[in-house]
Length: 370
Ligand SMILES: NC(=O)c1ccc[n+]([C@@H]2O[C@H](COP(=O)([O-])OP(=O)(O)OC[C@H]3O[C@@H](n4cnc5c(N)ncnc54)[C@H](O)[C@@H]3O)[C@@H](O)[C@H]2O)c1
Ligand SMILES: [Zn+2]
Image 1 (cartoon, helix red, strand yellow):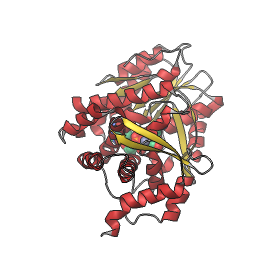
Image 2 (tube, rainbow, N blue to C red):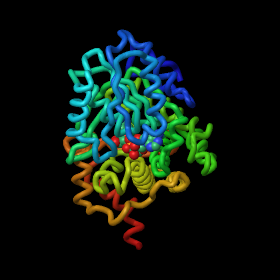
Image 3 (cartoon, rainbow, N blue to C red):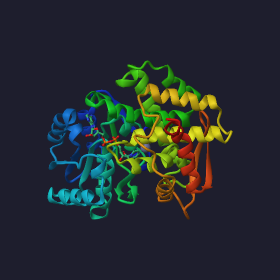
Image 4 (cartoon, rainbow, N blue to C red):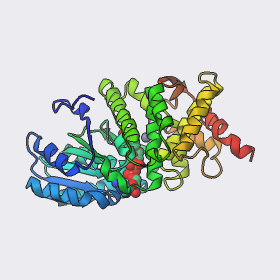
């Protein structure tokens, strides 16, 4: 992966490493021109377990005015109101136009802190330190920031590219089981976009190698990050190719909103979305049944769900949720359908009702048959 160019913030490539968080943060902040007037670290509760001490040491080394601000925690708090409260906390901590916000946490923290950084005084610089697998493979990359609205996921937000991304695999040691699986959901998506070799690498990894920062897993995460970066560089504001990254997400977001974050976390919803996409594609004769089965068994190995938790929402409810997808225009959807590893197509203009039927057919079968 080529190094990021400071002149081109779209290209802030993640700096992967093991145990380098403190060192890398100091270096990244010192590289900024102009130097920040102050550093405001937004720290997630879970990330604090392993990151708080090195974060505080890095801030002390920097000898800049600095504060650590707690991040709102959990998907249910990724809201407009919490972003507003965070902005006020940043201001109370002395945030000015020359400040640097550093988000340390999973996708919820980085989406929220990025959104607050983008909007506080019309935008202050920020850096990202993802601490979940999902963050390292996906959420911390690409400059999208967002909050959820009652109407749906990520419906308010903006593009705000970070100055740097530091991904320290050592901090994943404290990641809970379920969060590993969620991260793997995005890694599987990326492998489906990447191609046969990437998919096979995951299929060949032993179950235990998939549950720790093993060389195989880190290779897959770095590949996912590199793929996302390549696509974002080519299409930073999602006019075309970037839409491919939504594989599994149109279906997934509808299911995630319907179930609520406790029953279906983002990565789990993405896994179900991938399953719907590949089963639907196979049903249309676009993908082979064998490909759909491969994805099913890979998701199972990653301990991701193959069923919706509980009774599937009605078709009317699913249709309404799909029509509200922020990528829908004039109530039509662009669906990303997998054909084969590394070969995916965007089908433009799908009716939300047809997409809802695809969900029913892919996930409803098991419930209908008991
Ligand atoms: N901006 C984007 O491009 C993008 C892309 C994909 C996903 N997302 C967003 O990311 C969010 C999901 O992110 P997530 O899965 O990281 O969830 P999350 O941020 O809620 O983190 C999951 C849990 O792990 C804990 N945690 C974080 N780091 C930890 C660590 N090192 N050790 C122990 N616990 C730790 C958190 O406290 C939280 O309880 C969603 O809101 C999704 O919309 C954004
Ligand atoms: Zn995602």
